[in-house]
Length: 346
Image 1 (tube, rainbow, N blue to C red):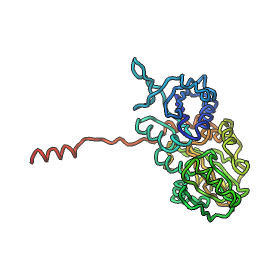
Image 2: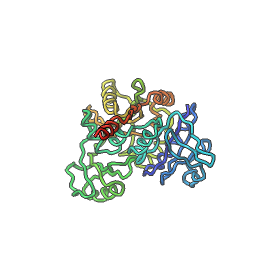
Image 3: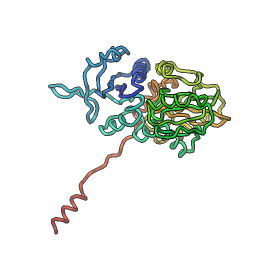
Image 4: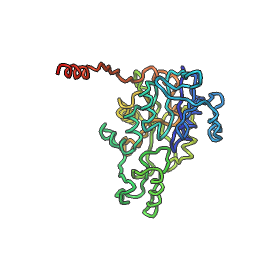
């Protein structure tokens, strides 16, 4: 299978996207991989699969690579002899954060009729914004962690008891996230968050909460990963998540009973179906007093959460063969013809 991996982007998570993309080379061993890098100034570059490594990007050597043009049907190399299509069966969107997760890439892919694995536009918008995710979950009957919302112009008044956690609304990878233990830490934490986003949500910090990660997709059937119980400190900071995103070996399933497993899987299916068709997502859940609460949706998880699946590559192939398709709309200009006909009679 010919898989194009799209990565990079104009995002605070640009470097994490590079790590995820390089990891895919170890995971998709049977496929022919084409790497297309989106620079911070949003130029497309064809990266040599055999030479891809982090130094190519940190040294700016990628600028020596061929530039590509996005057109109907795919990516093209333009030259004086014409345009040559980069052959691909499917494009795997691995751009974390802005550009990849906010719907920009999804809209391009749909507009130019390029088969791609990633949330579609509406799913991207609702999962990229943590506030909208809360609204989505509420509409689906999936419970979430209690929260409050502030923007830069709001009064800095919060009714949630200390300690609480402050998160920028539109960022992942723990960028700009702080745990606030008392009032003396509040202004600094908000200042940090507002450096990255104009809006934040505040959630109670639940000491010792059990957290579980469930990834999955829908091909012509449900394909759910094992459920992971990450063992971590207060929260994973940017550097820890940077390393975490390079994982490529399968983990062991969480030690939980069948009742809790069923609750987590049911919550995942409610979130995924049918909005996220065509994508592989990961949902992070908290379990408090036996109740499953959605913490976050990861629309493009680090390294596509490959380490949670028994045979990730085979699943990608099945998904690529069962992607949602936009219906064709036939334009016959009948309305305009009728107007023209009416004017002619007049």
